[in-house]
Amino acid sequence: MSLDPMTAKAYEGTVEAKASLDVRQDLPAYTVSKSVTGFQVGPYLKDFIGKDPIEGTASMKADFAGRGLTEEEILKNLAGVFSFRFENGAVNGINVPKMLRDAVGLFRGQRPVPDEDLKTDFALLSGSVHVADALAVNKDLKMEAPLLRVSGAGRVNLLTKAVDYGTQVAVVATLKGQEGEPLSELAGLTVPLKITGTYDKPEFGLDVASVLKDKAVQEGLDRLKKEVEISKDVEEKIPEEVKEKLPGVLDRFIKK
Image (cartoon, helix red, strand yellow):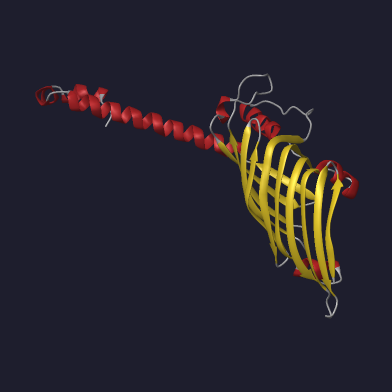
């Protein structure tokens, strides 16, 4: 049985969908194809699941096939691709700039500032999800925000809800600290943000401290390398006859 293609207006956007259902087998089989454009995803999620983990104007396309009657059967046999593009929106439940500010503050010996909205604004968020064997896998997440660029990849187990996802947060503009001062430590750095837990109760881990320590170590090594190169350059310019006459004196001034 096939359902005629349908087009409708909803949530300020356009929805197109078609589907088929085959009940001639023990486990009914189905296909679903759906696309939306100009769709306000925040109000839609609020109406259907009672919360809006993401806001923005959405363009999405989904093509899935599967079979089953129970939720477990459907999830085990689901296969397909879902692509998305959200513009001028926000991810709710996490404030990445605040996490960066707090982490640098702790590194400086400051206390976190509690009162900030748990949301991360973005200009663009896009990616695709491939579903098979009860796993939803993403390898191409991209987010562009006023202060940040984020890339990500990982997977979600649809049966257990377990999340194993990693992102890289690049600071592309100067963040302000707790007192309004620029956080120069983060300039040009890329910080790993790990997402675990379950998709309905995610846990976020941002490891800024180790990145700052690595940066400090690298800067120290760069300074040492520069000093060694300067010392070698000075030594090469000293005539050999001078080196022979003043070996002890030179050793105190030239680092080898």
